[in-house]
Length: 140
Ligand code: IDP
Ligand code: MG
Image (cartoon, rainbow, N blue to C red; front, top):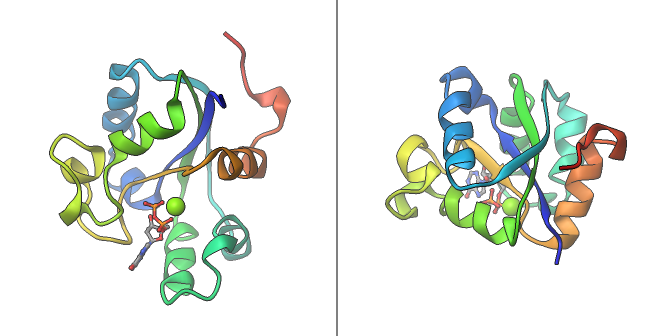
């Protein structure tokens, strides 16, 4: 089973000074941060990252948002980490997110929802390699 996933603290999370709070939640769940850096995506880079959503009504807007300021990108490691971190994030729309999830606690908007997490092994592989080379990812 794939033990890595890609997490992003989105520009709203960074500008609202939620980096520490999000990382606290991850570490509190026993998830290991194997790589981490701050980046500011161009519009083109954001469009490449969200290529799977090309053509959807929110594609232009979400790629404007993702390139509007710095993000923190991380590789997370742990047993069943893809599903565990998705559960910890909560539903895309924070109004539908369960109590205790990151999005329920911190997010306000279906677009500006503080965090990203890969949704499958295939997307995790693509998304990790979009931002990190193998050399940047630390072992235990
Ligand atoms: P996810 O982040 O929970 O996996 P996706 O459906 O993959 O959700 O959508 C990617 C991102 O696009 C969301 O996190 C959110 O920022 C944005 N988004 C998704 N659906 C909508 C929408 O209906 N309106 C505006 N933005 C949306
Ligand atoms: Mg998604």
